[in-house]
View (cartoon, rainbow, N blue to C red):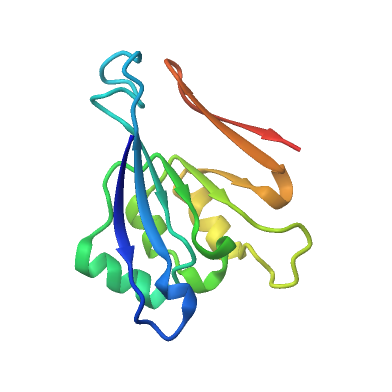
Amino acid sequence: MRLTIWAAEAHHAEANDNSLVALFEIADPQLDEGAVGSAGQPLRLLALGDLEEEVAASWLRRTGAPEGVHLLKVAHHGAANGGTEVLEVTRPALALIGVGEDNTYGHPSAEIIATLEDLGAAVYRTDLHGTVVFTLDAGGLDATAVP
């Protein structure tokens, strides 16, 4: 496994914008070369913390987004203030939104969900699906909801 820190700032007035953005690359040497999760094509998980739209856009301008993201941990419980630009640039196959059931903030936003679905991402939400277990094998990346 390799971990790359894409952002870890501490100078923004809004605490959410100081979130850690991390890319995890996970490889199983037993998988056939070329398969997602193999040494040649590691599974790429991007975790966005709670970045809000303006700082996320600035981050993209400065560093760009990692290519080939398979699984995205969506920013800030899928709140609208995260914007859609990172989603559109990374185009993940799977998206995870950690959000409490019956939260009073209205998370996740309909715009975030619609954007992910328009991009073809399979969306998993902890408020609807409970715990989500991701597994990687010769057949690829799979998600199972454990209510």
